[in-house]
Length: 192
Image (cartoon, rainbow, N blue to C red; front, side, top):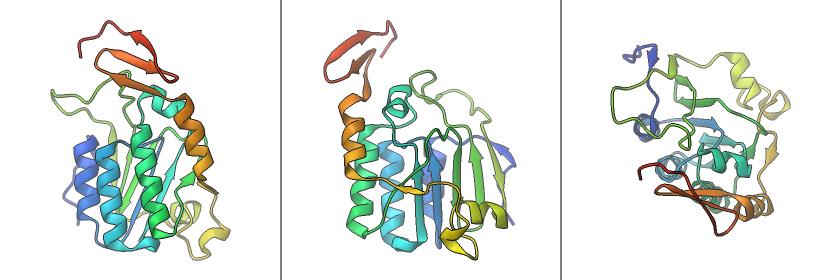
């Protein structure tokens, strides 16, 4: 039985905790990822094996620009996948988060860090914990009985050229400034 409340908060620390606890399988689908999530995901991928983890992202500069993930996290997870001889998959426009670890399903609304940085106050409910993923969900993400023949999400493997294209136009936040398209700086007028 799952001790987690059904309505909960899914921040970076909680996602990392769940990834670290995984023993059999991990599915991570979100617009992007941060370096901390990448580190935990890479560790889980190496620990569980290349076939036990599936990563589906929206590999697009907009994801970095909005703060749903970082180019560094994207590059690092791509390097892990290449080291393991597998792919990160691309799902254009995905804006929900899905984390399946073993028999637990967490569906969450990722926080765009450009708009709303990680909260240091009370946790904000942005997620629903479910038990075992449904058979239909497993089919749609490529883990059903017919594996990839029923898959409808994350069909395109991410190629290095796609990541290089994102790197060429991404936006990075540094303190209260945005570094836009390789060096142009915008002052956001925000406290760092």
